[in-house]
Image (cartoon, one colour):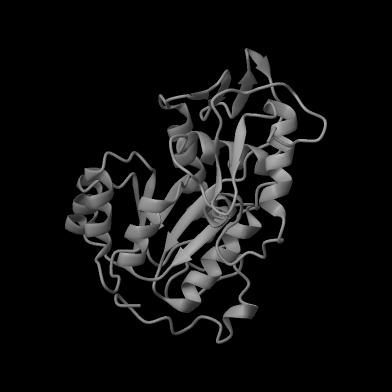
Length: 275
């Protein structure tokens, strides 16, 4: 990492126990309990982790996974900028001393686009001037290394709770309404029960409702980067959504991907839109 070395951590990142870190970056304290797994009907929260130190990043990602987050991990500022522009996240953990683009520059660009994404700076820069600069640049929280993984998780939960309580525009199309704050979906005013991945797929389509979404883009909305993706996952969840929201709600553009149809259409038993 550009700010300090990772000596003192386990030599094999695959064998790191993220709940018992000690060493240069993580304070040696009793670990906090990992929250219970979320209900299948609740949306799995997705975090962007921006950290260039391989050992530290691997350990943080493992800890986030244990806390039931889907975590995408990138190691330089330019890749972070692209990820933030192309994907929807619930929060970002951002290092400052990054290759290619400094973390503060990434943050300032994010805020210049009008994004209100919760951002927690995680850095070895620990002076008062550094903290003031990071918060003034748009960070929602600032945590210095060494740190406790349980504290990082608790701070993320607090940021996400505050963001969920803020005014969030609802997403609507053809009688279907999705409220990101409450995670509630209705069709013509009637509640619709969705699984976590059905919800994630629907939110992606509604967020980009004027665009054609490729299969790869939809897979990204369902899985953290690097997760194993089954070959027919998107088709399965499209099928489920058509059964619940109407046969014409999602249109297949053969050879390209999917986009929202002009109307919800009737409920269907086979999940396929009429030709």
